Image (cartoon, rainbow, N blue to C red; front, side):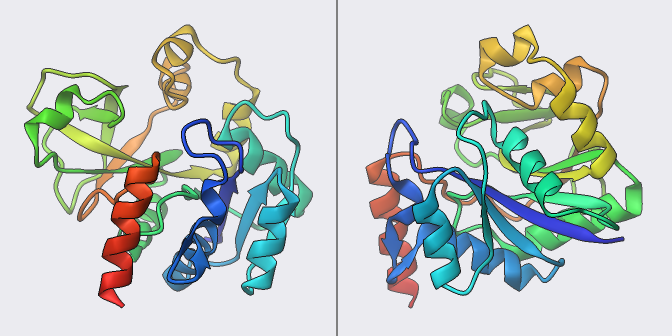
Length: 243
């Protein structure tokens, strides 16, 4: 099966404007993510963005990027436009990586792709074990509830995704990476936003609300995402210390 990786990215993030072009080890965050996707070696990698500055940065660092509309409500709409622009003949799976997670574990990306191929699932994602119980009540950390206990061998159906939770059993820290079959992605973007999705600000609920299952693979750990200046400075310190 052929996989295409698309990384949606834009400069106008509300909490940290200009985030994709902030530098760690003299390389922008978006170009770090691009290089991680390349290292996973699943196939072609493209950044989809509404900003010419991001296109220029990715290309200057040896990557591939295309310009998309500024009118998309979600990252999934952006990756679908990118898919249509590049003539996706022969592509079976689209891996949607977050452009603000330069510390994502490459093995986790590879594992999700393998699970998708072996299971024939329509949408797959990742989740990690919750190490700090305070995270259950942190609205910035999305949780996924599964029917049974996640382990390295299974690929369980998600029951729901939630921001604030008091349930400990079978509750995991959701990592916002998705793999879609091309057919599931096409179906998903044509659906209207559900009330559940709008209320919780969780796009993936649109799939569940419309009877599209999402399977979950266990990740080694939850990467540090960058939502605030503090997140950026903390991750920059870690990544620059490692080198």
